[in-house]
Length: 172
Image: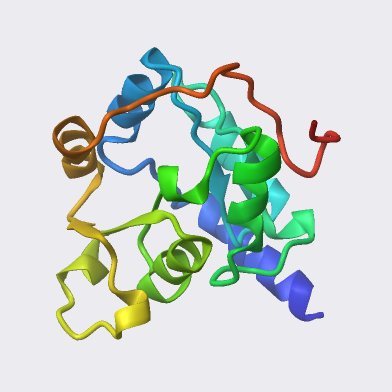
């Protein structure tokens, strides 16, 4: 019954779903440089598919990991570690940026995996975050993330540039 209630709330949320400002530009930058990008969400695969279906001219995120993939939810690092090891063929988590709008879930998962962490949105303005929830970078939105990528990081693609969807195919 609880899972059905969650699915109902997610389905209602589809009507309000909007792409964050700057997502197209960030995806374009990463895709042009063949930098892999993934999505890790606590939402269902149905919600993830709904999101992917509404990406205007943007390739889907690969791997795309939802709660239906069977990993413990964020803030556990398991899914992010799996993306690095299997989805991206062994990229070290220290070479990955985990970006999200939740210090409690996204930043902690990233830190626990050893990734670089970026907190965006309203929560990034907080100055009272416990150490485990303190990100490496704070930004207001994805337009700032685009600038951060250009200024602070050397963007290097993986050798093969292959993308594999976690939870739907056997990963190599």
